[in-house]
Length: 394
Image 1 (cartoon, rainbow, N blue to C red):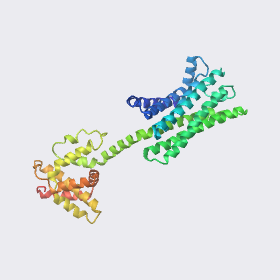
Image 2: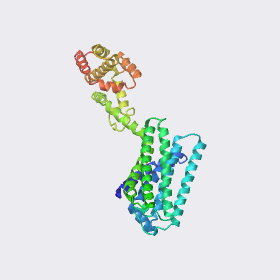
Image 3: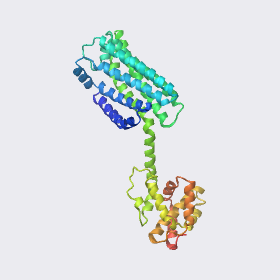
Image 4: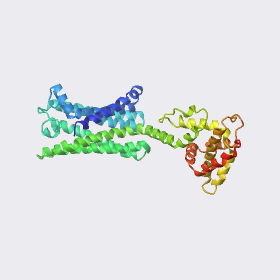
């Protein structure tokens, strides 16, 4: 792997962790918030310290050859523990059960981290190895035990979390299920990483050289797995927000035809101006359309609606005919206001306005349907028939 393959994920995860810091400060007492933030932080630190330039720098700063090895292994154990604790808190259940399971995993990985430091202190690894320490010292007393300990701890987390996620995914839906499936993929890759490393170590014990499994195959698998796991945990948290944003954007576009039609009417369009594209439809474009329809209600001509309804009756469903007839009435009202801008707007509500109000109650997405119906040729025909009459809307 190239150095950037380590540093780019580290930077991306560091940015994600920084973005979550305000939420961490606000919800520090929430175990789920703490678990998510620690997992992202541990993943970022793991990528950073696993990069060969960082390994070399840490070894030089400490003056201890291969000091980076137990450091990286401890961070990997912390990441594995964070995954398990987050799964436990994520699934929920009785608070005491959650705390007991979390403490059990925290204790297990605390022991593993202490064991890693102890084995390294007892062992002897005088020659710095940036990429192949696992296989180079696979037969060295105590260093051998350190390597097996971190790999087994990593694989335990991969097996347990994969099993939990598979079971849980069968009982949930939506973004949570997507996140769990992504997690399964990531944890399987982590399991493959551990298996490749252990296989290379076992091969050294039997006098064979399968180092390529450890030096060439395992690192990119681990990097990919770590990123996928982090994404899997974040998807259920950010997925609904992304869906809401996309839904707002799609609604914004679907209302475009109706919005542009109403903008063509003379008069005050304060509500129709300066609407940013990222605004939610119900707070910006949809609100502006509602306001403009209120200004047009005195121009709604029931005759235009009934004529369009009659023309469409035998050509489509009753619902579609009703929508097209309302769209024709709205389009004709826009034309009427352009020719009679001073019409008294305080007169009694017209039958056409009442018909539109009733349709909005029955169909929450009426504005989208009207926007689509404005493209109907029957709307254009109704506008032409209504234009020459010159009569006041009713």
